Image (tube, rainbow, N blue to C red; front, side, top):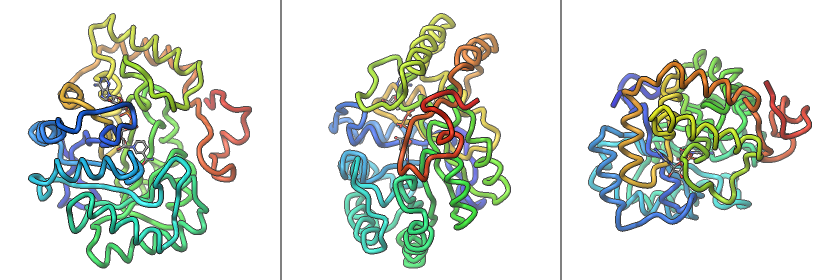
Amino acid sequence: MKYKPFADETDPISIVGFGASPLGNVFGPTSRSMDETLVGSAVDHGINFFDVSPYYGQGHAEERLGAALKPHRKDVFLATKCGRYGVDRFDFSSDGILRGVEESLVRLQTDHVDLLQVHDIEFGDINQIVNETLPTLVGLRDEGKTRFIGITGYWPGLLSRTLERFRTHSVLNYCHWNFFADDMDASLTPMCQRLGLALINASPLHMGLMSGGSIAPWHFAPANVREKADEAVQICREFGVEPGIAAIAKCLQHPYVTSTLVGIADLHQVKSACAAVDVQLPALLVERLNQLFAPVLNVCWPQGRPENQDASFRESEQPVAKA
Ligand code: NAD
């Protein structure tokens, strides 16, 4: 495993992070009886960054991760989120955040988290997030309930514009830098570099499209993207490379990203995610995949309030390639 500093030099986090949404059965059922072994294996492989949310399985993922992490709590960097509690359940108010965080800490069996993030800002009123939600997180930091604060979301442009108004320690963006997309680098990466913020890149498999297995029924990607993913899985197999490893290894090549968060559901996926750290993908495979994805690079889908969609998407007849 390799590590990078998070926000300051004292907090190196693993460049592969354990995304715990699968513990909320977000992609399909996972076995609770395996949690301790799974989390223990991740820790043994050097993963020290764990990310969860009350949204994943409506508290289920936090509860399971909290129990499994108990023996390891002091050795890991634990991130959770607030503000999103269901597909259509959001509460970015100060009262809602305070209540939500207390409930998260109980489920996680800890008195503080290392990182508290506002979850999916595109579903909120950005003025409220800047003027009410984030100041509440600062208060929680002052009380010692979290060490760092951050924002998360789908649209890299919206995240950059929000960071211009309120500087956090970190930002998490998903599905915008992997084989399917590179537009995280248009504004968000340069802003993080300029401000020295931690940048967390989530969903290297494009929320499972590169898993080679079944796709979650709720997945938003349009048919042309899914077709390319199916072809990409075949191409990886022709080269004798596990598609999941190829997808994660690609993300680990990003020059600035602090950590890449992988949704991990079983022991094999722990091993694959960690193996990706030392994999050198064949140049010809990367070339074939880049060529394959070029026609659908940066194809997006609607997420959040209409006014919060990134401009390049709003201006297009959706969903089409932005490149
Ligand atoms: P992902 O791209 O990591 O895909 C996860 C899916 O791929 C799961 O079904 C998983 O079981 C499967 N998988 C993982 N490794 C595999 C392998 N080697 N081979 C085959 N299949 C494999 O997508 P994700 O889970 O959405 O993203 C990772 C994490 O990032 C999440 O768990 C969450 O912690 C975080 N995240 C946060 C936000 C947000 O804050 N808005 C959004 C997306 C993701």
